Image (cartoon, rainbow over all chains, first blue to last red; front, side):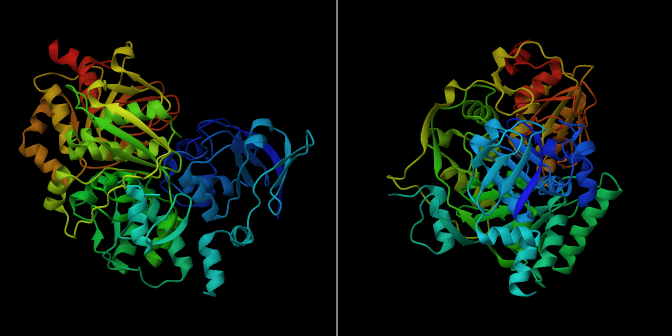
Length: 164
Length: 422
């Protein structure tokens, strides 16, 4: 499985209130949530994000609330992967559970810049900055996690496995 | 190697003699919690699991507290979806408006959480129940759905950071000042993935409401959970509220900690978190003159009876500054009645405060106290991120009930001592 896209770049402690402000949590509709993704810190995100694009951030991405609406909004925006130095733990679990691939990689997060073209190979854990030709190594996703992401999340994956 | 308090509770619920940090375990849950924002998403996921019933209708709690009383049509639809699910599945612990309170104040009061329990909740402040010696942690809606379906959840066993407390607070200092001080010291990811375990002789000097406040904000340091040992204060609370048998787990004497911090409570000063991170703390003497527009006293962090009493002590016989809106949110119906019986509402209303029914409303910028562009609030809530209480260019300053009440009177962020001596 490979993702490729242009990079949106953010700093430390991007919290779930800026990923999707609570004033929009009166719906669980994915498209409505995506329409307001990141708007309080980056009003251009929703206007310019393309399918496949990648978010790169520094430490503690997704801190704050447990709202699963946050990774849902990012995934529904078309983002194919989030790379950060570290993730807040509830966000990490939620992202995997809804099938949004996320990778911790200190070196990649330190070096990749806004607008760079980046490719991620989830089988090998290789992150390639195609703009600068730099290559970074992250932990590869084990097969079950790739299957879970392909299924669209934990619930669908479990249902497939149990033949429900 | 010995185990921490948190590790012992996890081991017991996984049916294991012992666990170690980093180990992946499957554990049985005592309670699964959701609210009107997170449960609707969980209910959709629950349907995908293909289960007809929840694992135990006594062990699921659904609390409409965030956007209730319904703030708009969409919020009403979400509350209705949760209500319908609760009825279809005959969920015992569904609390309608009129009985409900803010979930993390309500569940302990209802006796649904207690020492030794393992609880997950689709709300990040589920870590509050560590005040009672429970292991409780926030999860997302998919995990909540899986928990409702199976009664189990997988956990990565956390390591722990220990906070060894001694001494007692000075006047007008409370649990909020302690936890803000700690978050300021270790940062918003200072306890990422770890347990925060509070120990030492100073614990005995913390009221149960102080402990709820401290455990509640463990997530604001990135922690998986925060937990206190069970002592006479805990047992007195549990004896009054908790219906099940108390299970006490103590850390082994040779338990290992990632770090230990020694904190003398008598040295803690009133503390304020400046925008836009809870870790951006200053002590009250370093604040400077910050003019404010609104004060919020309440929430799962500071909406309990002790908090209201502390605010009332400052507001008694005084007036809220003419340019300030002061909003009070008792966290549950029971706390509301108690505050009324103690005459606290007379004090609040005479001072010029508005008193609300329980709701999370303003804390997360939902409703009932939204800030306009450029406005500033002093709030006893738990987060001050960009746009948290309204406009992206508004500001939230986190503080204790005493500092919030003093600030309401002064019209700028104020030291309770100065207001009381003025």
